Amino acid sequence: MSKPKAFIFDLDGTLVDALPDIQANANRALASLGYDFQMSLDETRPHVGGGAQKLAANVLNKPIDDPHTMALYHRFADIYEQHPADFSKPFPGVMETLVELKARGIPMCCVTAKPAKARIQVLNTLGISDYLMLALSPEDGFDKKPAPDMLDECCRVMGVGTGETVMVGDTLFDIEAGFNAHCHTVCYCEHGYQDLPEEFEGRVVRLNAFTELLKLLDD
Image 1 (cartoon, rainbow, N blue to C red):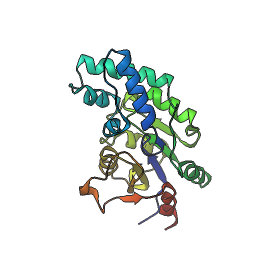
Image 2: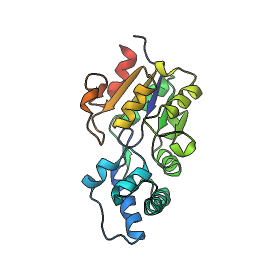
Image 3: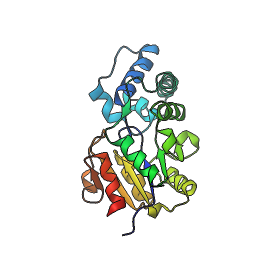
Image 4: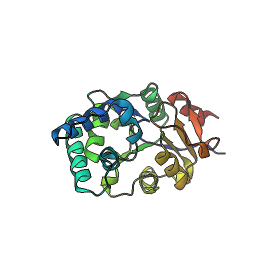
């Protein structure tokens, strides 16, 4: 198999350990709307990866288009813009890998379900934006993962085919998006927030360390 020419990354659970900020901002939003419960880190973890609107629906146990769901979603997004990275930080090996990929001239993009304003703030605050040609959220006019739309657009901007691109993520949404886009390789981060679904065992590259991505260019 030929070597890949580009990389696309998920954000939360892949590049950035954002769980503490997701928990804190969700709890701020709940409190501001008068709800009398708060979520622990363990209670928040299963809701990461599907986007803020789905998180709001799951937390309230209401339909995704319910007015209460939408109110919590919008409040969460607004608060996240004010508190983008109070606790978040890149996972070990992420910045080292991005620096090396950029030095080799490898283009990179990010696709996330995170609200666009929060995505911009997080990537800028943590110094990741400088390494990316493009970062996209569904709010930019694309279907959410596992649809391949955001991946297709990133590849168009990078000037490569999806078959020349590695998709790196930590959830079922990321993995399915990678396969739906017919990516060169789909990688699963062990440090992420969801277990690898059994049906994908042996079909993805498991990353025990983020820097192992560089091996894909050396093999």
